Image 1 (tube, rainbow, N blue to C red):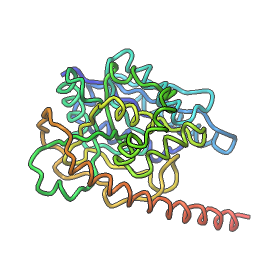
Image 2 (cartoon, rainbow, N blue to C red):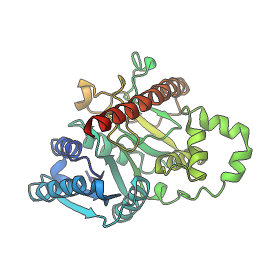
Image 3 (cartoon, rainbow, N blue to C red):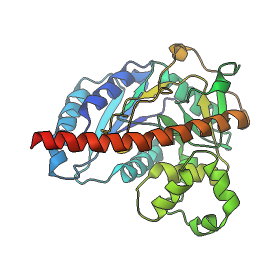
Length: 309
């Protein structure tokens, strides 16, 4: 098998990055995989020490790596997550033609690399498929679902993979945003994939947020490119403690099934509208929880800052 490179994006969370890299090293096929880690520069003086700790760990990690090759790119400036991912993926995927991407708060199962590489190989020439997700929500419809994968129109960013010919066509400037904004039907269709995603795109274009993910999801939606999901997750996210750019709280749906080591049967399936709708319902509930937890997180920080003084 021709193994795709794994790209990891890190900032200042050494503890989570350690867990992320350790899990990847336990993967079947790690010794055949090239690893690239992009370490973003500190945003301000308060983050410099934590960023330095991350980089010191990475220097040691590279020396003792199980990967076929391991390379660390250290940015001298703070690019932010969006620019880091867009630039980093573009750089590596331009050489390899495909890539597997994780952020530092993603923990992979030992079958993650096998699942991703087999999926990349299976759908490489099926151009209606735009990406592969390693994560899936705990959907009611999956309990009696008799296939290993399902397909929706929504992209995912908790451990995912794609190909150069799909990635290179993304318009990161969203040049058709004006026409999209006037098209109520199209906006409703996009919003039906995930609660709040229409507002996220508007906020992105208004300069209120800086998200690569919403633009990637819009590209997939606009070009009718599908995303493949596993019945059982091959990853879990440990970033829901307020330490990350978007992380807030741990959610019940976030787990790796015990059957992750089983070989996955990939198929050229159409969109599963039932599971797509169920996922949209779950994201709506999660959206409400995130708003509440954000308030709790802010209050907690205010209290702790008061005690420190």
